[in-house]
Length: 311
Image (cartoon, rainbow, N blue to C red; front, side, top):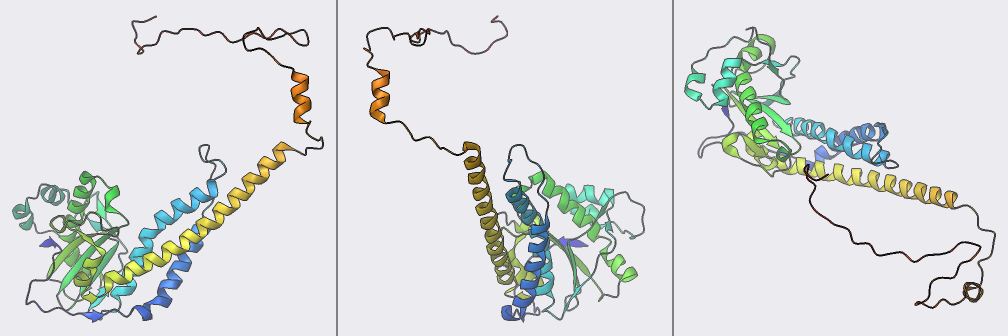
């Protein structure tokens, strides 16, 4: 029966491996380099609202999209430090039984536990986990969905996601036995990882980066991923600074070119004042060059709220 991942109970032994951040740094750097290459290669599309700033907007959007994948791959690297964990490649998405999803959506756990599903049943809905890990020491399958920030999702969408994950977890043991050479599994847990850590809700299966320590059985797992995000953020900000500087220089150059060269010397201020002459504020302006200047009139205007009945 699948369940939402919860911390190990007191007194329950679990494998804990020290996560050596120094050893992971070279792999993290390569991962960040690969991701930044994709960000830099993202083409700038025409944007009427952000005309002139398209390159900056493209980098921000690309970095935001790719950060989720960066975190996923970082968790893979950290998980590899625990010899009891096996990363299972999900070549095909897991089938989702509509009846099971409906039961989990309504929190009808008793009826859901009575279902016995074969992974080869016919369905039109599937779910592909971001990470599928098997902990051989605990005979546990972990189905993880990694979100850059859960706060950007509506509660209904998260409820639907959790129901799909739980329904797919019902068949994960059969999938592992049939298609993968993985350790035997007696239980399947699901967890939605909120990398931002703003919406942690253990009862709903939403966990923060720090929860990776007990979830993966690796001390320092959460700190490692936070370090990865910090380094990635620093590199992204450097790229944005460079593009901002280029945009500012380009716009200054465009303004200077539009103004054109100024060969004529400005007239003396006293000469301008002398040419203009003095005008009494109480008198009507004097006509010059055959045109009569008139002072603007003050007009009262009725104001109100727009209504169909007013023509």
